[in-house]
Length: 191
Image (cartoon, rainbow, N blue to C red; front, top):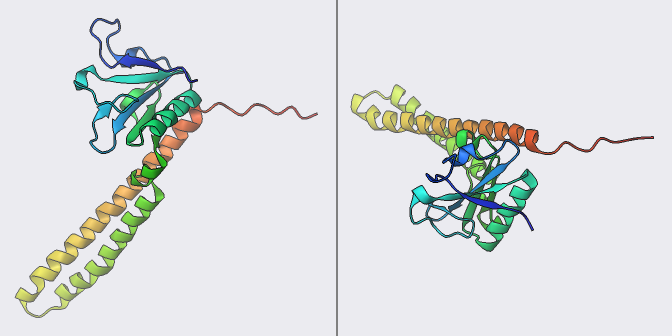
């Protein structure tokens, strides 16, 4: 059984009042969110009546936090569990845990990245000929719509590719932070 401490995010009666001031550097914090509504909830999937009275879960180690998140998602498949280190939400979550049936909906999933890249390149392939046609057309009224569509298709494609680049860079930084928190492999004693 994993030891999880549930704490209120802000409790004016507690000293310190904020959850950020309670978390020690070696602890990890779990936040739950309902995937369908996007609303914060507890680890059982019950939405908070008042977001100001929300809670999070504290775990003493990353493996414990991972186990607690996986157990919560197994009980309630519509949950998304984000695990943060003691720095809190200043950075993207170290881990995001979803039920396997929902894993393909996260923006960092390879299938989502591939679909976005495919759409972007399709927009480029369709937009460039429209721009070329608009630049070669002889009558002014023939170039307005193709130029408008072509330019907007290329801009939209650029945004999609830029978004993918940002997601990959964020994921790379997250993996580096995650490696720093994972326990080092035990040293080998070869004789």
